[in-house]
Length: 442
Ligand SMILES: NC(=O)c1ccc[n+]([C@@H]2O[C@H](COP(=O)([O-])OP(=O)(O)OC[C@H]3O[C@@H](n4cnc5c(N)ncnc54)[C@H](O)[C@@H]3O)[C@@H](O)[C@H]2O)c1
Image 1 (cartoon, protein in one colour):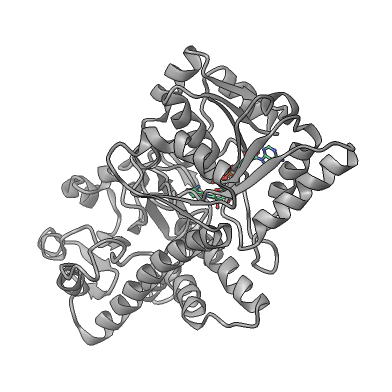
Image 2 (spheres, protein in one colour):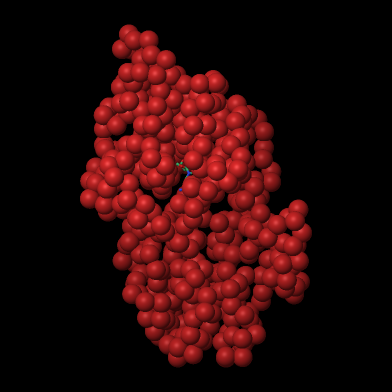
């Protein structure tokens, strides 16, 4: 089976590579020439655990090809996936210009029946626009070519993307023809040997499902963050509360960890886009608006706590930051809480020394040389007036506190993910500030 994937970012590259792993011949297409040339040489533009070996194996077998040409790349494909970005437009809506450009390009070059499936996260009604854009170009060419559209939202998580794609909990597919359903069943069969469901539905429901899933997860995060802030005021241990509620199977223990707010390329933009879609339909999503407000506030909470600790005087203080990416196991810096914290620190005259195991190159694109990048987690601490842990990379979980104490000018830790034990740190002579707790003084 031959397929193509247009857009070779986190989603397109992982999807294309994993489809090739099942024996399908896959062409990954991108307009970014540098990216495509690097991929042809085996150089992967993103950090994603496990991706390199599977990509190398499939390129060596010549099942996985890369191209900048939609015209060449889609020929003889049974399915073409659209996996380009849908960043937020100025008004918060999902910007569909890349998706619709790809649809037009497909219309210009389609020669035979194919199924065009959108993997990008797109608002309800986009498949109809994709269909029109393709049809318009076919009409201009004076041809009659049959094609189907489908919606196949992607649920992979950066950092676990390969596992998620090869062993999905469920696959959602919106179709409007039996032919399309049959093709997608065939393509996804190798991933469903564990009997996880493939759910076929109408296209609009599939498009909505993706937004609602992300909105639900963002809601859980903002909810627990708000609870954490209340716990702090009322002198309640939010970590105990989290465990208490998480063991209720109706609630579950995932996505209820207090932290520095959600970031990344999906939750912030998808929450915004759903609020905007609702507004366009004269409906106000009150819960989601609050989710967004709480998250914006939460992204500053570590800064606010430090500011309070130093009584507003951060000028010339040096602050060490551990973790820059929006979550562990990815180099993705989009909407990362670390950026908000760092910008606030710099605006208040502080100096920042940061360490991240993989995201430094991406961080430099946003922060440039406004901060110092330490080559090692301990070097970031030298002569610093505080350590702020922002992203819970596993190597930060059991650090050498003796060394930390020796290196820091002031033994102060702000734990943005509540991973350290307050009593232990107190005993070791640290001042310790976590999410949902007042600062504890040694
Ligand atoms: N990143 C995630 O974890 C994730 C998870 C699920 C869904 N999604 C959704 O998937 C979509 C893609 O996200 P991503 O993170 O992979 O984006 P990305 O920014 O990493 O990659 C998008 C790629 O599309 C390419 N592109 C843009 N216009 C193009 C065109 N006309 N032709 C060919 N290529 C083009 C870009 O050069 C880029 O390489 C978004 O809608 C996103 O919301 C992302």
